[in-house]
Length: 609
Image (cartoon, rainbow, N blue to C red; front, side, top):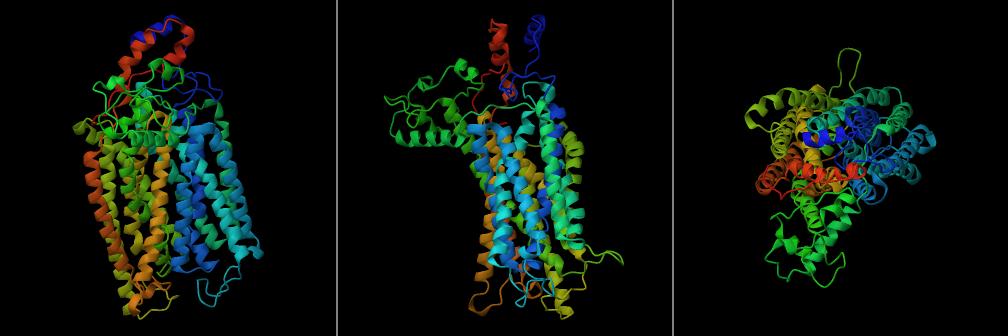
């Protein structure tokens, strides 16, 4: 690489990025004036305020639904799960629009405006007395409490689902834009990128910590109008912070719909399933490296995995994109397809995340919330402990664990991404076991004191739930960050937003699975005259049985993960192909073409990392 840099220096040329990034107008971009942590500071700043706004609504939503809209345990939990499903599934649409048409920046900006409008409507719905039902004397869902009218519920949930549409465009693009600010072909920037998602999640949970403490306290003790108004203002500030950093951002050009390209490969492979594979793989359809370089894309050589899809590149008399695909297109599809089993194994922990913010909180409502003689801790503030332990574990992991373990594994990440994910899945089993033990203790106190009323407060401190919240925070450090790293790192260059959408999709599917499991268990457990495991009155419910059931499902999911991980093949590190990049760079005679040609490289087949 030194030869290339010397040549560029001798010709008086600037140091352009080599990973295909451009400015907002599509022009080659200088490394020294853009990207890196300088640009990421604005993106991370946005995320801190946006997470504060989002979780300022989401963390305490179960309390609003039960105390203000007077919903029951299962109904409120399912409404939150369904909303979470929408919030986390919509990024598929946002990723499609970004990769195929608008690019990440403009998709993000438009979605942010929609997001902000939804927050304004939501604040209005909790502020006007005509848009919520009269107060319930006991403050908890009860048969004597007036229910919200269809109009009141309609406006409230309309605002929530407008927010879901907005987050569909922001979530898959903001983190991907952040990672795009580091050029993998520059060693120092690459080292920064390895830690990016650790500190990205640190910023997320920093904003979440503020919402889970200060904002929840405001909502419970000052009012919902102020408690929702502050997150709305915070979101407005976050959008302004992001826009201020616009001149510093590096951008990846839209490369067409990744979903369409994948479907074309599947269709072509199926339609040519009986075609004979050529003896020489070089006879498969492929474009020249110059064609890819002119579009700022990378050519990928054929790999041996998922070989059935290679039939999509067999040449025939038909040249329709639904009958003939390039080897690179096939390999991109392979890279996205092989991550689907990983995605499936992350659905169960996503289900547990949803339930940690609903059922765990409702347990807290029944417990002694006193912390000192004059202060009661809001039950939803328990989620702050998830955030606190997440923040602590991120710092310890990045600054202590990784440097120590790296000496033995020689892996720049310390351990592989799948190993990190596997550790998190084991922790999720422990969370359910811990929750079961805590619930059995809570029920024993209820029996000992004969407190079986729906509104009875048990003489047991709310901090008995602390271990399961703390473990949830530590588990998130392993599962959530590993998911984001895998789905971004292993996605091809033109499908990074879709890769990030895989991350949110697992959360969305987990939310829908949570709804299904809660409803199914509640209904089945009440058959044949049984009182049921999950009732509005938690003091006579059997949540401990439900937690055992979830622990068993988590164990089975972990066993499935072990099988999937055994057969998973990592992509070849792109920086291993630098030599080919340098040789192609040196063969470019025109300095005018240097900025474009320097992005060219020659990837190699997938291999174990």
